[in-house]
Amino acid sequence: MSITHCIFDLDGLLLDTESLYTECLQKLCAPYGKNFTTETKLKMMGKSSLEAGRILIRELDLPITDEEYLAKSNALYMETFPSSELLPGVERLIQHLADHKIPIGIATGSSFELYKLKTSKHTELFKLFDPIICTEPMELRLTKPAPDIFLACAKQFSNPPLSMSQCLVFEDAENGIRAALAAQMHVVFVPSLPINTYDPEVIKQATVTLDSLLKFDPDLFGLPAFNDA
Image 1: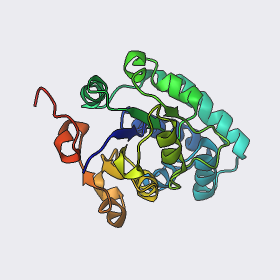
Image 2: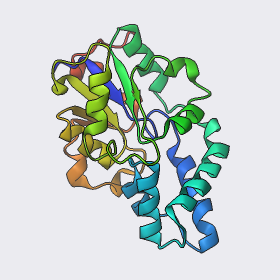
Image 3: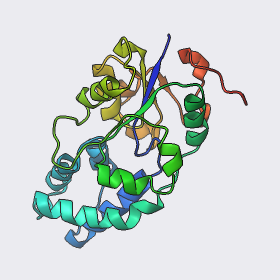
């Protein structure tokens, strides 16, 4: 297998934001006597803000409108996300790929505004990514599990891959796995939630499943080996 381009999800894969999302959405749900469950969260992962909100409102029967959800959740996010930290192995892997001139991009369900907030402590590292494809709150076309966001990212590389099969996607969500496979790309699955919360039928379709990016072996994909391995 010869990989030439790498595409990364953001939340729960590069940045430790999934716990922050849970914290924020539990705060949003609490006044209505509702609990934000892992089951609901799995359905929301990879969606645009609007789609995620509609899922939350429907699943928990919240007495709020789409617009109220967007306003309330965004206020919580603006306060919380600037503290986002990198997950283990991220800086090593990204710097390694960049040093070896492997094109790297980001394809995220996050809006550009929230992307800037989440990455504000790590701006130098995130300058290495190009392109960066975000999903604005009202966007429906680019949301996972449809392949569109990964296809859009591949096409916007300055030197696009000859085939989608030369792209390696890194994901932490079921919707991300489905989207990568629909785009005919290979996918490394690094779960951000306990492995038993995911659908095993989806997980087994990933090319590789790892418990951390620290365990990633570039050799498996024809990528340059780590110098410190």
